[in-house]
Image (cartoon, rainbow, N blue to C red; front, top):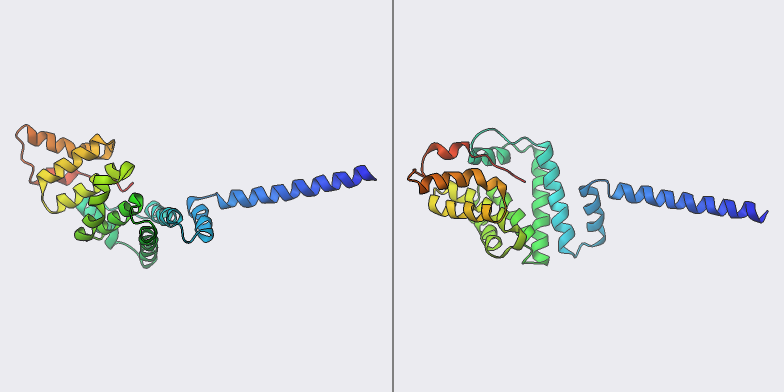
Length: 206
């Protein structure tokens, strides 16, 4: 009788553990669900806001369409092509990046994410407000900040500064900067930086 009771207790414990594991696996099934759960438990922490915003943004990127064309056309077209649902996700992600920075003003990853959103909205002044400090002091985020900064400088036709930003991005390990940086090396050999040679440079959002 005692052995039978022990078996039932063990079965109950195993079943409870299995249910708990299943619930945990669901919580961790996607970054959006995982960070949504973390955010629900820590509204006053910067990291859950940043990572939940990033998960929203990345899910939108995966389901969206980046138009063909040069880098500026791609950026402009991506934002302009937002559906009402996409715009809602875009704004929600932005709100979480802003909240992360309110909690932790020096949070480089959130500042970079917000700067890239303003870049895609073609709000270059606001983009620079967030990208420049990250490029200068943003640790591991510096390479991507310099790359995004180079796109602002391309739009402004500040080619010499653009080349410096691309060179910094590439030297910090961002392989996406290489194609644009080749144009700058061509300039060092006497080529012209202005003109249509930038038209085949493609945007790499991630």
